Length: 428
Image (cartoon, rainbow, N blue to C red; front, side, top):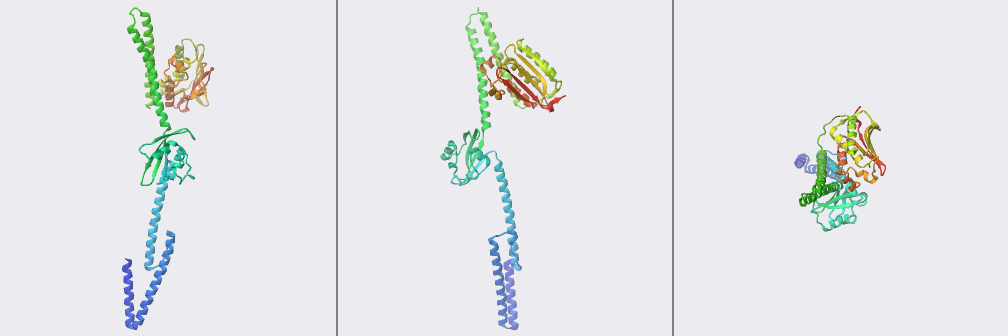
């Protein structure tokens, strides 16, 4: 211990001084003790001065050096400073990792002080709330927000639930924002982009509404005919037969709708595809035969270019998807029109094509054709017997086969539906 060694040192000086005093006289002993104590004090003062200046800028690489007790003191300072430096580096690294993680968050994070001034914000919050990290730091958040509903939310100070904000600049977004106090003075303002979630919810609501609407019409027809037949005289057999035929057609329509819903549900569940070698040229002949049967002689259905290459995929699903494209072409082509199907090469890819001379599709409708229940002309689509789910089923089947559906059309001049398959699925 330093204090024990200091006591031993001064006791030794005292003993030496007494010894000198006993031999050479008291004056010489006192002189010796005074000189040693004076030199010791000067040594301590000098090292204290060096320590004082070092403490003004305590760096590990400029710790003073000395000898005896002071060297041990300086060594201890050196050890502590090194520990402190390492702890500071670890803390800095931890803080850097935390900031990097916060910077990378897809959700917006704004740290506010006790006066609601911005201390820090990540890039996502700048995009969501139109903040500027350079100029807005230190500014009260209430002076900067451009969303009245969010300003009112902060003013009411009821943070038990998030609020929904809809923005149009720079892009149309729907945000969820919530304030979260995390200590006695500071708060977190969290924002999350829920645009896609809201779209899914909208699609779900529209889906339920469309299914209800599609089923309501045939059920109303069937129910009305049943009531009519109950009150109908037994002798009116011809009218009864007509009503029964209409009832049968409406129940068939409901059956097709339910079947398509079950098919779409199965495809969306992500069930494993049973793949096999599909003879596309043979399938093309079958599609032509089915198309001619559906047309009943009202159209010309022919095969154009026909490559001999085959395909790896699920035969039943591809038959359903490609057959749907052919049947749509027949339904939307007036009598006397022409439907041409082909299996041809385009841009180093093999494509199934279905061209018609039908009514065509306006450009604004093409991006939405594969949405469930989307119809260009609701009245006409319903009269053709479609359920509104056919192209949605096609989209899912092609997605499972890594294929791409390309639609080109011009109103009054017909349409072309081309399915491009990747080279990995082609068998030459």
